Picture 1: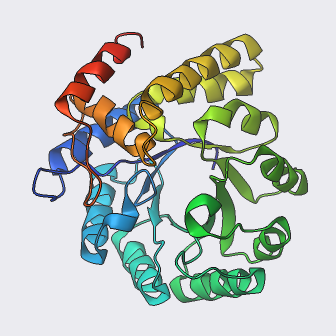
Picture 2: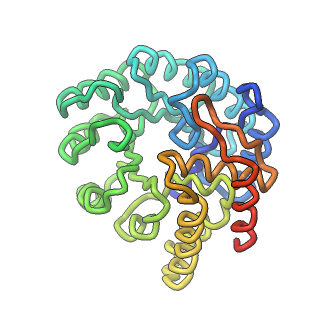
Length: 293
């Protein structure tokens, strides 16, 4: 798989239930723009605050909306390994194409434990799996040597790297030049650099609100249009600086993205408990910022 995969936000109603209408509208909009795939129950989708049953229903809803038009990647990350297995098995019966998993993220694991965990997980689920590296939230990085060992497992098909560590990413991509193992970049702020270094594409949160930017950057890179790549990347950086970093809140990315989407009429401005959405006053300020995009 190549291109831009959208890590779909989880649109919520005021009571915390799934906003099915917004989920459908957001997904249709991304597919129409030419997105290569959709990723449900990721970090951008606030998976860590959602119940098991909610995530199962969310995956079912998205798969029914997509109707096979693009691949669906279902996140199955959890602190409870057996929950990850069960969610993965359910995702398979629902029609998901892939699963995506971080290491369990409460107790810090060593690399042998990481290797054994993924080997066991994919053997239980029997659905192609992407490794998900996001050490800022999981306490452990999936080290290069571990990725190499896991890539030999035919059930493990790729890596989503959200470390933001370009040196780590370069070290990984160098090992897989001309290989079928797929590598995607999470942080959109370095999407250009990731593509230069051989990434298959990006899994970028901003594609929820401006999918055309990320698709345009990817196609410009494929066409060798450096000027367009640089122009679009600068636009993405500006959006990140002004919206994702609107405050110094630890979760400013999630709050800023949902606020911007609410202003655009794409969803309601509700986050999963315990996160608090930006205030009406802050929304007004972000609305002024969005006039520049």
